[in-house]
Length: 288
Image (cartoon, rainbow, N blue to C red; front, side, top):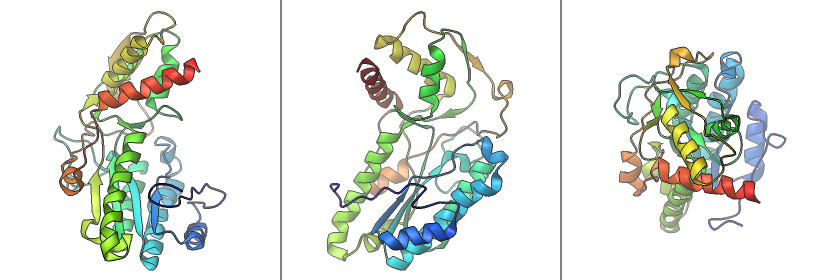
């Protein structure tokens, strides 16, 4: 039992996002007051060769979730991405900025955003960026693995965004839900309490860096924590053109979090502060 209620975590055997019937049946079986969709097809490059599957999971499944939650009067919290934008310019993107994804992954996520909105139920869409953590497959873990060789790392330096710790996203989401739960005490349901704040919100760390700068910071923290086994690797800046991938990436992934702060009074920490905490967690796990 969590502080805000009983939590059920469903995996693919219980709810297959590529199967509409499985999505509907799973939701109706549990009948939740709140559904948080943190699942997605996240292999950006592979989505270029599997666009239909990516669209089913990222575009169609969230719409079914939204329809089911509207039917039951509950609230859907759905996570989206900076990849819905084309990465032009240098100004931070607003929630109202025109979306024009560059790849199949972004197109699927944008379709999911539209499907959730079109269902016209109670929903919150949190668009985030450059998500990483102490575990799993992500940029931080890749840099740490490659750094063990001591060989130079060639990292893209012309894509700018905000590295965002997955735990910061979870914490901010919980604080939003807590606010809505308190409001629901007077209105009678979480879904009704969320109606006035329905919409898309950006939810990313404060501050902007390139992938190369992020990698340098990871290496610096690694050295500071005594995790070096030898000489720290050199981090060599390269352009996106020098590192071609099946999927094009936006060069400008800066997100403005002003709407989240204005509506809920929340602001995620500076990216470097969170990185320091994550690296302490990684160091502790290795020492243990």
